[in-house]
Every structure is written in structure tokens, then in C-alpha cells.
Image 1 (spheres, helix red, strand yellow):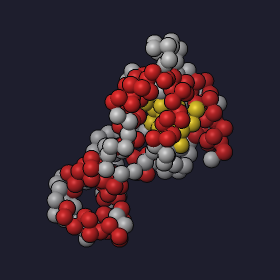
Image 2 (cartoon, rainbow, N blue to C red):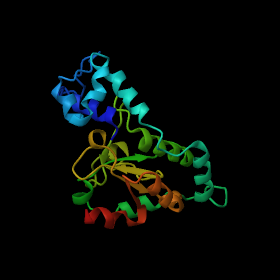
Image 3 (cartoon, rainbow, N blue to C red):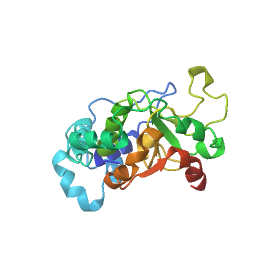
Image 4 (cartoon, rainbow, N blue to C red):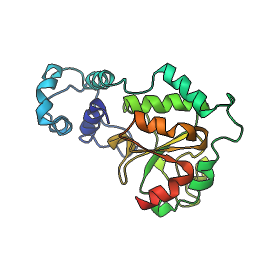
Amino acid sequence: MKIGAAIWNAVKKAYPLSSQGVSRMPNNLKFDLKNPYILEAISEQKLRNFSKFDGKDLQEVCKLLDKSSSGKGFTDFEIQALYKKAFPNIKIPTGANEDAIIYLSRLSPEVGSKFDAHGLAKLSITDQLKQLNNLLANGIDNTRAFHTAPLAAPKGIGAGIGTGGHAYYDGSFILVGEKGKLITEDGIKHVIVNDAYYNIIKDLQLKFSDVNFVRADQAVEYFSKL
């Protein structure tokens, strides 16, 4: 997780959600190096680097910190090359992204409920790769809503909203947090890659070495071992 997001999430701990699920964080919070929650997110060796932000708007500082540390993702040119590698016949095949639905339906709720997840499913298949690249390169924007759900849940939960109570399986990628931790607080640890992008898993792993990329058809075994 990027340092700005880590600082923001640390400060959020001082302002628990209301009974209605609304954040109690006041507007115009300031960056204060005397704040123990901010100090929690910054190593002692780097404290001097942050003194210049003392007294400035906390949210703006966090955004600036994350923006300055971005750029490790794929360029637009590299994204286009990945499309050609993923779809050598140019056209995206019909029936793409079925493996996650087929295989993750076999993941037990006992295992899946331990992993916080978010499926990238609402954009086009090509845009989903761009969205993944942005999230892994720049981190989650914690000033905006980012909804997550268990990787698997008991049958019947969430049926009324059509999700089955678990994260969406029908997109190209499913973001997964570390076991027992929330994505929005501790970042993305694993990415389940659906069949549309099997051909570029090695490229993704080389670019984002701190994230584990897992084929959808191998995800049940992978998460069960964890």
C-alpha cells in the first residue's frame, strides 16, 4: 500500500464509523507529526522527510504522496502490447471470463470468508486491464467508496442483490487481500486472473512483484492452502 493511503487509513482508526456506517472523520483534518496514528504509518527513519507537510491539509498531503510514488505500472504503449499478447487473434473471444465462475463456485465458504475481495466486472474486458494497472500502480483511492465482499460466502447470502454474498466473479480480475485483512486497509495481496488474460500472467507478475497472480482455474487449491 502506498504511504499516503497508509497514513489516511491509520488516521481513520481514530474515527470509527457511526451506527449508520458513515465515517465520522471531520473535514479539513491537518497533517500533524504529533498525531500517533500518523506516526504509526511512518518509519522513524523517514520522519524528517514529512516535516514539510506539517499543518497542511491531510487529504491533500496523502494524495500528493501517492501521486509522487506512482508510475510503476504499465505505460499505454505496454498496455496495447499486452492486449495483442492476450488476444493474438485480435478479437476478444466470446465466452471469455467463465473460469472464475466455474471454479470459484467450488471454494468453500470456510476458506473464502477469510479473504476480502473485489471483482473488476463492471467495465469492458479491455478497460478492466487498465483499471487493474491503475489500482496496482497507484493504490486504492480511500477518499472514494470501494466496496468489497468475501471471496466466497454461504449460499443464500446476498441473493437479493445478485452477488451470492461474495465478490463478483464474472470480470477479468478479482482483487484479494491478505488473509484476515481488509483490502482498503492493508492493500491488494493477490489477484485472481480470469481466462481472458491467462496469456499475460507472467507479464503482470514481473511488473508487480509484490502481488501474487493466480489463474482462476487454480484459485481454489491456492487459497485453500493459504
